[in-house]
Image (cartoon, rainbow, N blue to C red; front, side, top):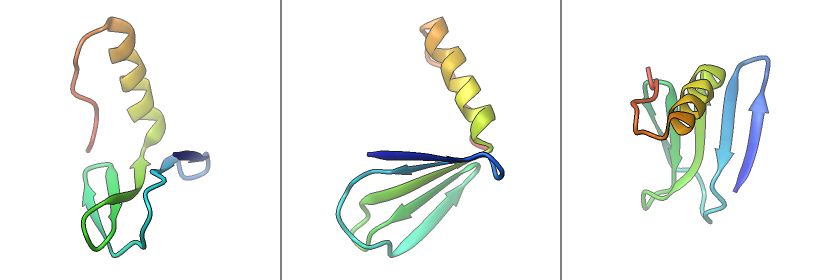
Length: 71
């Protein structure tokens, strides 16, 4: 897995390390999933990453499941 952060665009890019070529992408809220032809997740983009990560850290510190911003 490889992580990159684009500070100018506030996008977190997560490369899963799975083998394959990106065939298509699905956009849901602030997440863009790049998938292979057989549906394996190859790359995930988190838009508005600072807001998403802040909420994830807050939920982790509180030790309970919370809905994270995805829109």
